[in-house]
Image 1 (cartoon, rainbow, N blue to C red):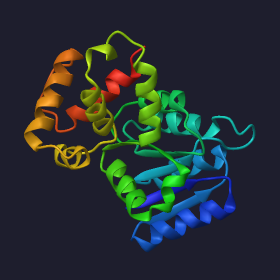
Image 2: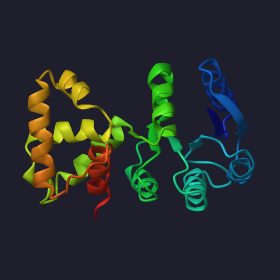
Image 3: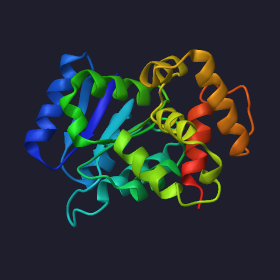
Length: 215
């Protein structure tokens, strides 16, 4: 696997590169601004780009914009965005570019190296990873909507874990319930949110993302 890193803080950029290399992930380029990122993506064609949301010159959303542009020119380009703060609007904007191969994590999560590497591999493989705090913020906003009001408190918990990309088995372990109970909750969630079922292996996460993206 080959990765491109875009992070303006030299210390963090170097740290990310060392973590990836230690787990047999080649770092094709490590850059500090969106212009260099665009060039690296064009020249290196990496398997994943790990991008800071806020980069020079204004430190607002340059990294996010560069990531979205990259996915526009190369559909399905796996992007894992790192953010210092919970910014659900940025997460929604990124997901609108396509739910597959997208990740949004707080930078603090990098400290859990195992979980971080797992997120990198999952996104590179076309999966979806959302930071639990971002999911909580999104769901908190949705709690005020009529649609969200259809769900029970337990179903909202299950929905949050689904949005993080967790398997049914993992959700059962988190909630200390049976796998059958989780299946029942998920089926109820789909029904209440009027989301059609299909044969797509990622339909659970994709359906949740569709819901979170809705106005």
